[in-house]
Image (cartoon, rainbow over all chains, first blue to last red; front, side):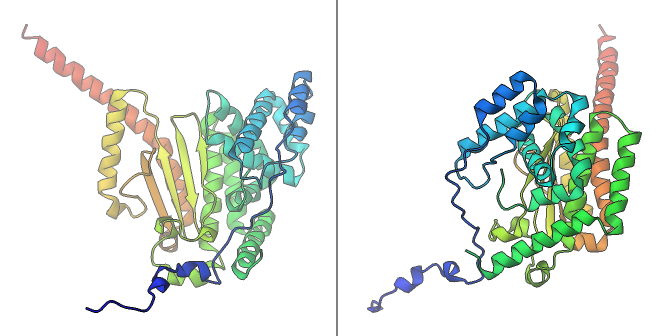
Length: 150
Length: 213
């Protein structure tokens, strides 16, 4: 057979790249998001001011950043604060959050379930129950359908 | 960058958020009532796991079956999107784990037309491991008659259910949810019962055998 003299490079083109209906995730510039401030949160926890610590740790969530370390650190901090709460105070803590706060809390709770350590799941289950009572089933749906996780 | 499908996806999720928040559908409020009642009647950590599980499951089923975006894709989807090797990101939901400790957990992955639920059963010692494995194998070999069961469990878990929109069209959604939760509750009891009977039989056999000496 004679060799094809015309270029066959068109065969290597990835056609799916040029599909106009192709779904591309929004890439926000998340480089400056650092997650909650460790020093501030630690000091608040040591002082025993757990409500403030909860609010502080839910500020600045590392949602857009691609850096896995930032996300892990934030997750660890949140877990520390959540475990520091007494069972009776959990409800008050959840009530003090606004709707976005409850959604963010749910995201962190589900993230925390993925890596269970000795007592974390029990604490997280209690928080989950209270957060569900406050946020309703909608908050869970928003966790499931979020394109960017914490 | 905001292209057409991006807008569609966001609009869809936005609608769902509004819809779920108002709880306007009777099914939702019914499920919430059951959740509340379940909390009062039962006690202990199991309740939390079940309510957490139940709530996510109800959501998933509602989602999987009422997706306006999906109508155009469902008809062109012959297989459920779980298995289509994550080809389109907009069709998948965030996978979610609910764990009681690091040995017992439930992994829920959703997509627009199906839900995959994987369960890791508590196995405290060797004999429970063997019993669990055999029990699951027994069921998974008969997965065709089971409909919603998967023939192979997901990596790291013991058994997996795959519930598609076809199943929810033929069967009641709330019954499916009830079934899965019931399954989770019963599996621990069954395995303990089997272990007890194995031990009892072993003791009788050993007694009989050693009577000869």
